[in-house]
Length: 478
Image 1 (cartoon, rainbow, N blue to C red):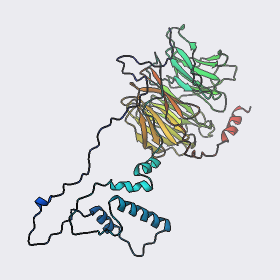
Image 2: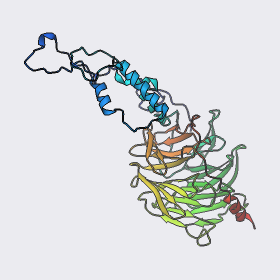
Image 3: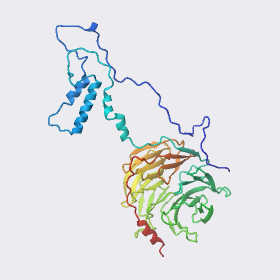
Image 4: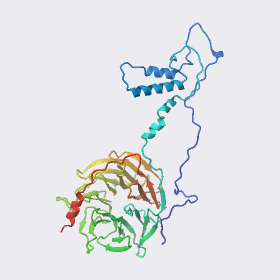
């Protein structure tokens, strides 16, 4: 089997987008919204026995302005405001062919002058377009920055086969093979292949916090630990009985948590010479398709095909690993998308599958819902942006989109389209600016949706929570 990631090339008759083309707006002739009325000729004028004033030559716009904004007694203005108002009025008068001595209402006929639009008086202090540009938010891309082929990507919602390391390397599983993409150099290598084993597929993978060790779960219930720089298989864990579809490293230790199709979660200390599970959790009735340690290492969140989200607190004297500290049952479909807020460590975002389509933000201290939104599509992934304090979500049917939400309001900031089938996996780069998405259309796309704006100051982060250091030491003190 010869599998590889390759840059997409244009094919005749292909509907798959392979290049980013900027559309050129058509140059259509603008419609005349306001036009001058025809002035009656002298032949059409009639005179009767009554004097009826003709206002054809009257400047009605200027007259309305003077009537609407007269000089009000007792109104105080700063010298700068008064000076600015005078300049604006003088400009308006000159554009309309008037002077300060012009009569507002006059009883004579005159042809209306063909003068520039009255809104040009804004030119002294910036046009309305310039003012709106200052309020304009950041740019959200309309299409992917780069598209790569990903042939034989498994169309299985419950797997987790895409991850991005702190070393700027992407690991992706295509069928039975794991590929590594060096984002800096663009080099793509085939790392390991299970093709020699009959019907063995890669069902999950995740980098450790250092970016040097890669954990790989397989369909034959194995978890393999690889040292990537040397390409050496460190050990194989065989504690599950069904496929391993989710993995998560504790961020401040060597503890690896694994979730299986049977609903069980196992913890492994990879420093232990004995490849056994230190703890086994059985709180899900169906496959554990989402598993995520919090940034502090204090809490573990798990989501399952049983529509349940569990939050585990191993340091709680009341529950420990014996039972979840919180169980959330509001979702009505499988919960694969889990994401801990990096600046509010008590906030967990979760997303439901096709029958649910909701994103919910939970306060894991109180057990309540802080915010929720109906996205209208299957939620397959969630990622937080620390720079913008926003939440990114990836979706399956029917929209197959990437969406960005404000927080805590969860109002939609924008969306990005391009995938032709449901998005199954997503990962964010170590710089926090680029997001990679893998879809059932067998493409890997890169979106630069959180590019840093040099003109704006980054939002101030909360003080670093160092409590995890204490708990990590407690865990391994004998």
